[in-house]
Structures are given as structure tokens and as C-alpha cells.
Image 1 (cartoon, helix red, strand yellow):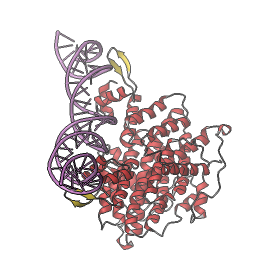
Image 2: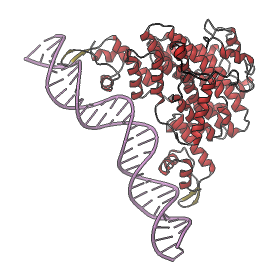
Image 3: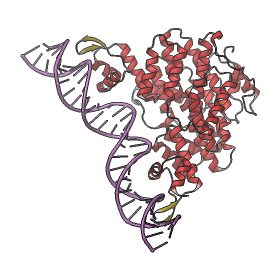
Length: 244
Length: 244
DNA sequence: CAGAGCCGGATAGTAGCGCTATCTGTTGAT
DNA sequence: ATCAACAGATAGCGCTACTATCCGGCTCTG
């Protein structure tokens, strides 16, 4: 296929495709002449991945390039890829790594991970990101929100375990590698959106009088978890919440 | 306090402070003369909030302005504020709301929320954000990741309930309102960072031979959840995972 | 086999965002 | 009286993610 077809099938303008070629996000097509090249369905798929990372995942061009380069590296393992993706997404713009408050916040998060026995190196960039947020919460006097950290960690440990199991179960390397990236980047978007929706629901239930609730169909019991879920997890899913 | 002191105490340059004044993120100081104004500790706090939202939370100036305007509105309820924050953060750049695939993805997420009985309007912008990601996952052939949606929703329902309880417990309106914003925006950053760390841990446990694990101190049992956690939740926290 | 039009590659230009610099006239501290 | 600091306004800058234009070569059509 030539570039015009690649453009029309992907919905991306030819100049943009050329831009991604220049930036090294997309491999050149196979040359069929001095100034002609042929593109394949793999290029089409790659373009969709690029747009998903950039438009939906909010990655910068540079971050997307780093992630995609790790995908292309044939002997990078799934585990290393996750680190690479994590590093690329974290970016560098930290607030002030020199202040004692920031260092205390970072130490707090590192200690949390250590107590849970997480196998992560102390220099993982995500610790810096978390430290930024924790330090900001503390200087804003929102210490009680920081107190939720252990619960956040517990929850994310469950989620991450299931995500990794899912991707590892695929077996085939190429599908695993792309699964790591998409579940990390796009899964985050979905999780964040669902969290906001759940917050809106939770605050409606607590702050709006029951007789002013909008009319909604009743909640279907027990049909919203996929097969294989343990009874304990289902029970926990409804624990610690006010009556609905 | 005059602007020079506000600048040195906040660590933000005077031109930047003037910029925030122009953009309406920061209220003008009380005028003490034709071209003099006095700033208070509230201005200092507000500046810290602005920087937290922008630098740490990644909000644009426009989104931060919308959120802060909602905070300032004296008769906006905590619940409405959450909607405003949610809306401001969602932004508008959606992928292609006209394609059938996108509409199917949106319907899928709306149906998920409806089945759980969430009290959220169908037009909530977070549905659009989630639809973007779900549609992207489907076109990339990552349907098994989409299958995790119900579990994501269940998890976020728990987290959001606890967050809202925490903030509502404060009682005082001003502290509630700021708690909504900070927990929504900064909590998301922390959650995302912890998720990536947990993913790295999970993939290390599954993909690296046990005898190559880095040496880490043992996991402390049971001391990582705050008081008030039910036994069921603690058990669920360790369920469905491979042996550690 | 001519010529219209698409091709790859290169260079230059653009729009928006988040500041930053400079200028003007005024004011308060010494 | 002097002079740095101030508020307010206008203009400019650096970065990112494209977008436009040009060029000589290719290829498809009639």
C-alpha cells in the first residue's frame, strides 16, 4: 500500500505520517524505487498504536518514541519493557528534589513499597512522581488524604497482579509486549475515568438527599464481575460502604 | 505582604504571579493605593494550590482556572464541585465521536455504570474519556484488557467511597471543597504511580526466576492498612495472587 | 510515450501554551 | 530628594506537535 492509502485507512494526514516517520515513531516502508515505498498492515496497526498513545494516553512524541523503541527491541523482556514504559511516561519535570519536605515524602513512599515487599528498585522514577504529589498534599495541609496511601497501594497491588496475569497468559511475545504498553497507558485512562465517575456517584449518595436521587434502574447483583473471581473479592467489593 | 515577599515565600517568580493574576487564577491583593496591593497568607496558600494543580496534577491553565473558579463559588456544593472538577479535567479533545466503534465503546461504559447503579448522568464527560480508551483498546485487538472493566469499576467504587467519606468527614465547607479537588487531582497522580510500581513488582514476580530476585527485607504482615479496615478486605487483598 | 499527478525527502512555517521581559507612570521608604 | 519596588499593559520567547511548500523522480493513464 502507498502512503495515500495508509493515510485514508488510518485517518491520519499524510504530513502527519511523514512527521512520525521523521521522528522515528514509524518505520519507513519497504523501498520499491528511488522515491517510492510500500507500507503494510503492520504500519497501519503501528499508526493506530501511535495515535492511541498520544491522543488517548496523553504521551508526548518523545515519550511515545521511547516506548515504541522498547517494543521494537527484540530481546527486551516484558518486565524490562514495563520499566521502560514507566520511565518514559514519568517524564522529568519534578518540583524540587532538594527540599527536605520532598525527600521526606519520597522516603515515605519508598518505605511503603518496602513494607509491602515490592520488588522495585529505590530509584524507580514513579517514586519521584508519587513524592511530588505527596509533598504537595502535605504542604496543602491535606495530610488525611496521604493517610490513604496504604489502601491505595493495597488496591493497586490487586489490580496490577490481575493485569500482569492477563498479559502474561497470552504467551506470544509480540502480543505480550504490546499488551504491557496498552494496559499500562490506556488502562490508566480508563481507571482514572472510572474513579471520577465513582467519586461522583459516592458524593451523590452522601450529599444529596435520597428522595432527590435521579431515577435509575436497579443495580444488577453479582453479574458485573468476570468469571474466576473469588467469593472473597466479591464480598470485599461491597464491604465498608454505607447502605445503598 | 507585598508581591516580592509573596514571590520569595512561594518560590514563584513575580512575572509568573502577575501572569496568574491576569489569568484569573489568583485574586488581586487588597489595594492600598493607586498602584500598591497587600497579599495575605491565603494568597500564598492559593499559589501553592495553583502550582500543585498545574505542575503535579498536570492541569492546563484553563482547567485550573475552571476548578479554582468552582472552589471560589460560595454556594457550589461539594458534589457539584466534583462534577466541575471532573469536567474541567476531562478537556475536550476526543478522538472521533461519530464512529460507530466509539459510540459502541461509550455505550459499553455507560451500561457498566448503569449496571452498578451509579448515580451519574449519561452525559458525564468521563464517559467520553473512557470511551476513547476502550475504543482504542478494541481497535488494537486488546479486547481481553477491556474485559477487566468490571473489576476496575468495582475497585474504583471502593476507593472513591473511602475518599469521599474522608473528605465529607471534615465538616467545614472550605476544607471539604479543597479536599475534593486535591484528592481528585493529586490522588490520581499517586494512584497512577503506585499502580506502575505494583505492575513492576507483579511482573518481576512472574517473569524473573525467584533466585534472581533482588534481596529485599521481608514483608511486614498486617501493619500496612489503616485502622478500621474490615477483615474481609484484608483477606481479599491477598486473594487471587500467586504465592509470594 | 506524453503528461498529469503522486511519491519520498527536505526545509521552512504555524498555532497554541506557559510563561518572561520590558516599559510606563506611581508610590513608599530612607 | 532619591530611588528601588510596585501595578498594569504590551510584546516577545521557547517549546511542542504538527502543516505547508518545494523539488526532482516515479508511475499510471490514455
